[in-house]
Length: 56
Image 1 (cartoon, one colour):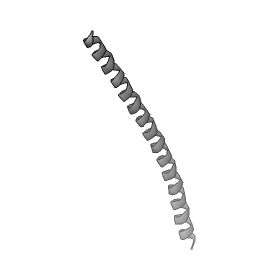
Image 2 (cartoon, rainbow, N blue to C red; image 1 turned 60 degrees about the horizontal axis):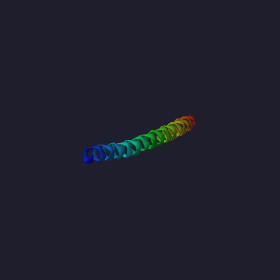
Image 3 (tube, rainbow, N blue to C red; image 1 turned 90 degrees about the vertical axis):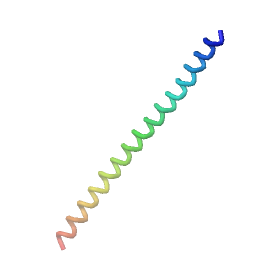
Image 4 (cartoon, one colour; image 1 turned 180 degrees about the vertical axis):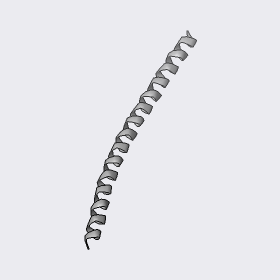
């Protein structure tokens, strides 16, 4: 009986860890997406600045 309880507790613990890891992965994907967007916006601004310097 104790083995079954231990096994069930282990499954529960692993499920919680998996859920936490999944949430962290989702957060990192979101952060990466936001950083990629910021990088694109900054690159556009850099291109605009180079273009304006070229006109001087």
